[in-house]
Image 1: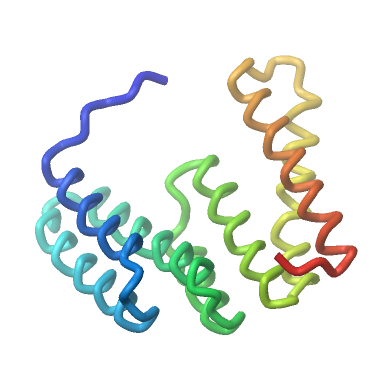
Image 2 (image 1 turned 45 degrees about the vertical axis):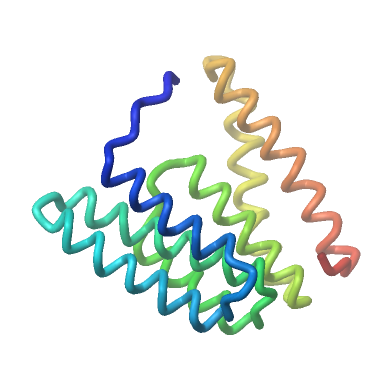
Length: 164
């Protein structure tokens, strides 16, 4: 798929989000406040476009989950963000797999191996089923093969009780 040129508002959003995520001096609580401020600012800017409002909210929650993992937050914090992400939904298949993997790593980091397994085992089954389809495109086959390898490795780590 060819890359599309980002619009100025998308570039501004990405710059603000990246500045928060890359900051070494900000506490998790302050990062959450800043992400929520950015969310409110950009939702207001795109309020005439429901798709963009939903995507802005999704992206903020994705970044919150990544921040929670980066800052090694307790499982309760990670779980709350995960549930918000589930409510907001995923933009596409790739984002669902990526964010599920990040949440599963949060589970692993916090020793919640069964919860992590409950997230990744359906992804493993989905990948196995997709790979059995002879009509799968080459790009999708590569995607699912990669996902399957990573998720099986995670599953093995979880079953062995290995913390991240």
